[in-house]
Image (cartoon, rainbow, N blue to C red; front, side):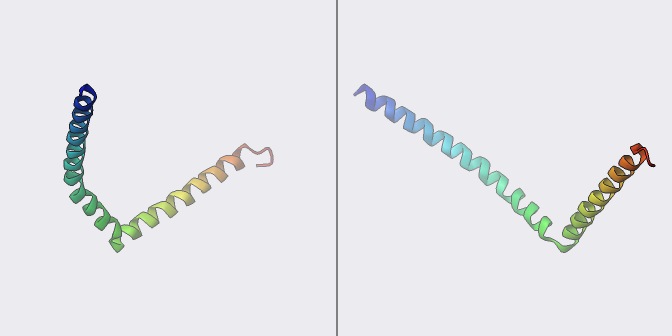
Length: 74
């Protein structure tokens, strides 16, 4: 009988946790969908691609410049 009470209490606690997590997730879903929609817009995708490409290009140029300035033949 005692084991049944412990199991029932744990089950009730698990249900409370599941419900709390469900409520938290429900609150976050609209924001997640808003972010997804924003990331799918062509303007934002273009900006992200441009920033990624420029950052990579600038980073490579700075790295090459740094290596060239440290080489004895420079």
